[in-house]
Length: 370
Ligand SMILES: [Zn+2]
Image 1 (spheres, rainbow, N blue to C red):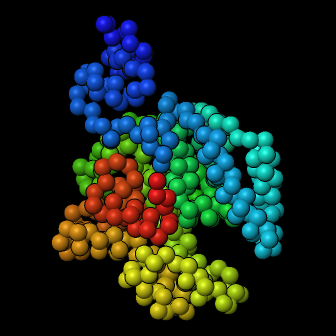
Image 2: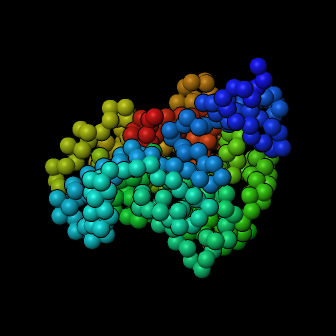
């Protein structure tokens, strides 16, 4: 039987004809055709990956159930806040809240986004209370593919991160494009991520920076096919780091609800058992009034606990772990180390420290377990 008698379609990929059987994914078809060298199974094919949406020529679909899940999350969160008399949330998100209720009543349908269009990028991110700030049309000047994947990564990481989601209940976060000096590819301040037009204008240019960075040990690598995503995921690592610290602080009654005097103990009781014995957290628990010290301790736990886990698993010293798994740039400070390990841990081919960084985030409820 000739191949084209089977159910399926022929497609031309990279100048090579590939037959894709019905129900078969592209990576498997490419692998089976034998025309593309060794295609590794997991690494290149994340079509079944619930954690990240697959972009096909800038297009992605958000399922009805995913929209409903997000809507339920915000409806719930905002209702709680409104009940508590949080009028700020009502004035800022009141209209969105009403809209979500309406949509829920009408029922959600799968939605297609074409992230080649800025309007669609804006709409997708707005679902999670991220705003694209298109100052002087700079966003227009970014490479379309890079722009699309940055928007998709921000969307997916936020959706997977209870810690970030919790803050987008009260604040808008921002994505903007701007022009920097030569050495800043992207930058993050709290909930604002900025991409440098001078680097994001061309995919090949960003790939060159990536390859140069790998060979100079400016950062550790990520899985194949994810090269240019390293930058935006690193920036989201900074967002995740900050937001997860804030998220954990709720157990210590730091900055939040200081007027509720009995809350501190109750909140500590709700802390997941899995982190009560983490060295820095334990210290923080024993010093409930040391506000600035505990800020630092909590933040420190996000790099120190993963390092300790790898030390234990691999019988290495702290220095050996860092030398083995962290780049020269990541060694600068714990913020950079965390952001680097976050990107490494999420984007295929994680090293031991990248893996443990994500595991720790999951253990404390800062990142979703799929
Ligand atoms: Zn950084």
